[in-house]
Length: 177
Image (cartoon, rainbow, N blue to C red; front, side, top):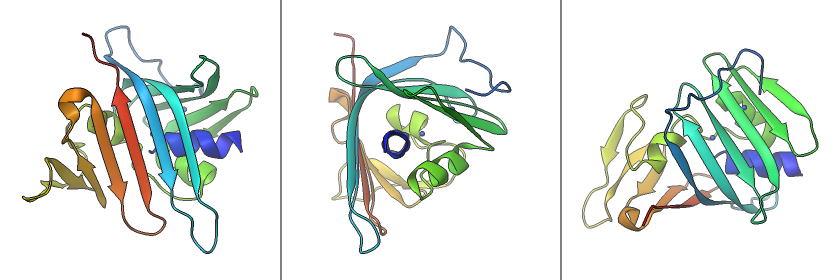
């Protein structure tokens, strides 16, 4: 259960020997993340909310998920050719890439490589994107997802995938004031 919940958050992204830890200069993004997966006839809906810390980009990085009280639920690290998911229970599972991590833990592929760019308010450069068309709010469409930046100045990013099962990822970034 914890494993599936952690992978859900890694939507809406791994600690192997081949991965490089993020460097000290990597920008830290932190905040709260909520992921909801719509119920289908084959599976019930799922939802999880957690605090997160993210360092890195699509190529290499680390994402840590924690409870509001700071207990680490899961940690993911990735580098070219490898990804690993470590859970609070102490187990670590290695994968060839972030897509494989998401498919195994969640049962479907999520654009985890794009998440660091999306949280920074920009399309991932690894796939085509297009701006959303007026009168829709500011943002872009990429990889079958609609990413809204309507409240980005306030620290909010909203990503939605409408295909079954529909998935919604809401992030509230911590901002220096």
